Image 1 (cartoon, rainbow, N blue to C red):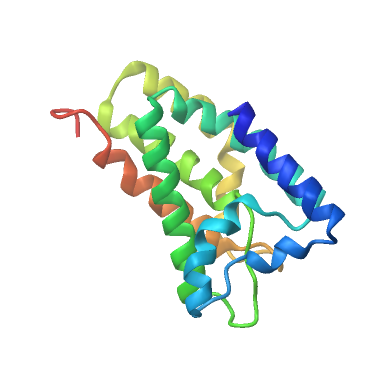
Image 2: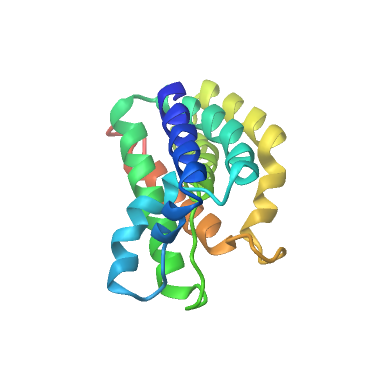
Length: 174
C-alpha cells in the first residue's frame, strides 16, 4: 500500500509541476474517451488537499483488504474502479470531469463491512466494527450533500465493494 500511495503522490507532484495538465484525464460522462478515463481517474486528484483527504483511508482500508490476499485486493480494486467509473460515466453531469481515489476507498470500506456478513468470521466482524466506528461517517459521502464531491463515484465504488464481498469468499463461505 505504501508503494501505491507513493505513486499517487508522485503523480500529483508531476501534475502540479505541469499545472494540472493530467486532470483532463478524469472521467468525461457519456463519451468514448470517458470509458478509458475510468482507469486513469482514480490515480489523479484535484490538488494536494484532495489527495491528502484520500491518502489515509486509502492506505488503511487498502491494507485491510490486502490482508485477504493480493488476488482479493486486485479484484476488489478493479470492481470498485469499474463501479465508480461506470456510474459517473453514465449519470454525472455532462460538463463535469471526475477524478480521485475516493471511489476505490468506498469500495474498500463496503467490502470490509459486507465481507463480515458473508464469512461470519470473528476476525472479520471485529475488523468491520472497528472500521465502522473509525470510518462510518464516510457513508454520508454516498449522498449528494456537497457540491464538488462526486457522490456517484462514492456510490459506484461502494456498490463494487458490496458486489465483491460474496464473490470473493472461499467456496462454502458465501
